Image (cartoon, rainbow, N blue to C red):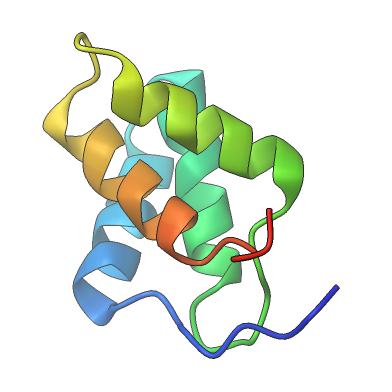
Length: 82
């Protein structure tokens, strides 16, 4: 897997941490939050499966603002060749 030059911002990383600690957060939110945190301070890149989940969350009109912010961060760090 290629290295990623982008990293999650501090604001999005903070949102991700809050999401993981929120007992009311959905499974997709927690999954996206974990991906965001794994890309904070590292050159990790979004995998194909997580990219697909994030893309679906962005396209879903019922997704919350939190879900969309996390998904947007995940998608922005995906492999540009996919």
